Image 1 (cartoon, protein in one colour):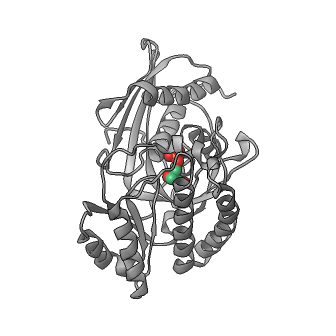
Image 2 (cartoon, helix red, strand yellow; image 1 turned 120 degrees about the vertical axis):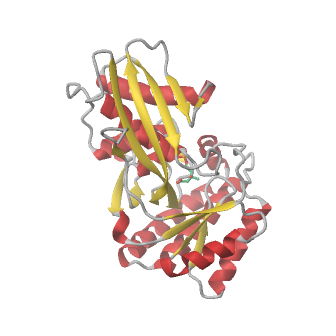
Length: 340
Ligand code: PMV
């Protein structure tokens, strides 16, 4: 174990650091765990870290705090949400041999409830800031592995660009790695917002239901093949191959969700309308593919020449509240002086 290196913002009674991380969109999804306690995913997944949707988190461990205090977008977390953050901080405290409680202040630059999961960027930024505050000397791989314990998809947000999350037999083997940097390929992800309501079943609960679907094992087997196609498509910058693999796995994952017990149907009528529109545009020759996370909003992947017209087209659909255009973005980073 390294000795604690005190961060510049820290003093004798406070250890503090600030970090930033981006949300990511999975092209092949993490859905279901091989080990639920350790959040080891059932299958490998591939994602793009996004530039426009980011979280900035400050963690200050203090000698005088009786318990962890967590504020997200100005609202204090209570109950299980705060306990989840506390358990994550316990992992970091255990590594550093520090028992001080922390004040955590986290801000998303996308509106709360915009239907974009903040857990990936949130737990990535929390891990980076917490580890830096405690002076832990951890490799990016170790940081990714730790972020995974908070939220599986957060393991991928530690890195920028195009990222692969490995499943593994043990905690040590399940980490993300960067495949290509953000400049490798100018792909747009148009996030089509059809609802801002909080989802009824959060993904951390949904993962537990995956094995109750008769389709789960079939999907896990198929994703291994889709991942091979995706890695090849990324290396060759073959957009149709990438889009087909992404769209297929989104549909497979939602088939697992819908057929689990209890059944999870995250789609709304507007979700299906966007899916139809994307496929219709594709039949008309526009390179556009959809993917959908554990919610009703749709991510539409396309290439630069088609971005503006497709965005306007999707924005005009009934029930579409907003479209947030994103590109591949950088990985998580420590912000040396948050005031800068
Ligand atoms: O990291 P979690 O527990 O929020 O799970 C992520 C689940 C999906 O967003 C549906 C898929 C993924 O790989 O991001």
